Structures are given as C-alpha cells and as structure tokens.
Amino acid sequence: MRLPLYGIIAISSLLNGCGNESSTLPPFEVVTDVHHSMELIVYPAADLLWESAGFVIDAEGEHDLSPTTDEGWHEVEINAAVLAESGNLLMLPGRSAGPQWDAWSAALIQTSRKAMLAAEAQDASALFDAGGEIYQVCKGCHEQYWVKTEDSDEPDR
Image (cartoon, rainbow, N blue to C red):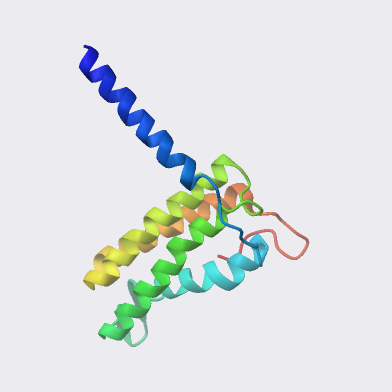
C-alpha cells in the first residue's frame, strides 16, 4: 500500500509545483463590460453559427443553410473559435459573476469546441447539433443572469 501512496504524493507535489507558476495571471485590461462583450463578440459569432446550420422552409421549398465552400466552413470554424474563447473572456475577473456563471461559461467553451470540430469536418449534422447545445447554454445562462430593464424584459437571443 505504500507504493501507491508515494505515487499519489509525488503526483500531487508535481501538480502543486506546476500550479504555482500558472496561478499568476499576466496583466490584462477588461475593455468591454458584459453587455458589450455579448453584443460585439458573442452574439455575432453565435448568430453566424446558427445561420449556417439546419434548413429553412419557405414558399419556394427547403433551403439547406450549411456552407457550400471550404471558405464558408472556415468562416464557421473561425466564429466557433471566437465563441469558445468568449467563454474564457466571460470568466475573467471583472466579468465573472461567480461559480455558476463560470460553469455556464465553461459549457459555452465545450459546446463551441464541438461546433469547431463539426466545421473542420464539414459535418452539417454535427454543426446543427452543436448549435442546439450552444443555444441551450445561452438560454440557461440568460434565464439565470439576464438583467431586465425597462427596454427589455427578455434577452433578444
């Protein structure tokens, strides 16, 4: 029993040693508040993803929204990466509203990674599924944290 215990102690010591170097954040400056971060960074990236997945049915028939070129898929991948990194931005000191907020932000990262992989693989079905997961994360966070104002009772997303 001593050998596994020593192994656990050694691994714990290594992890603690690594954590000390990375626990110091470099200097950063929060430029936008949460509202403007959403408006200028998160919403445009999410909108492009949602507008690139699924189908629209109108009087002329069914229209596939999936990209049709490598460049179109790359644009989706770029915006999925922006959305994933936005989860990190939302957890920065000055933006984070605490542990539950950080959990929603981490979920945004994970679901956006799925969209990145789907775009890289040019997999329309996987992109649609990831877009749905991203929507559920956004909706759940908005239900918990959306600050209602006189101008708006509901988030516009």
